[in-house]
Length: 202
Image (cartoon, rainbow, N blue to C red):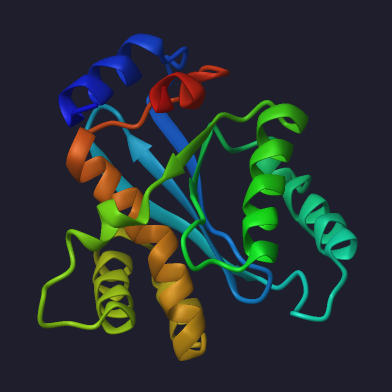
């Protein structure tokens, strides 16, 4: 499916008539899971970062059931349940650990069926196509994320970002960059009707 077709379907299928689209973007994991809240202005066609976070829901030794409980606690907070129109979730595959894949699947299920929030499964290859060939991925994610925050967020977000570890910066960067690359490609992600994400992936 080409980008023009995706954009057409998003606009056609969207049930949202609001000016602002509230987006939660997640780079799944169980340690240092990057999350970012972004707002898209449909009139001005501008994207801004409203918040960032690192979610730690366990480690390699944590039972998967405990990780799932921690994820549920995070997603059922007010800033997800009452604020988010759509979630962009990086799809895990290839060399990803089985536990990380389970985390991605659990997040998707809770958002879609527990909170009625549509989920757009993001292919990381789209983000990586934007990376300069002479830069390593972690450095590019951190640098580009810092540029976006500097121009599209309140100063407090930059203060939060600067306090993160190098690994955490790349995880937050991944979450922010996957939104930016989607908007660069299709201009508008107004996927706020239930089931839109499923139709886009078909």
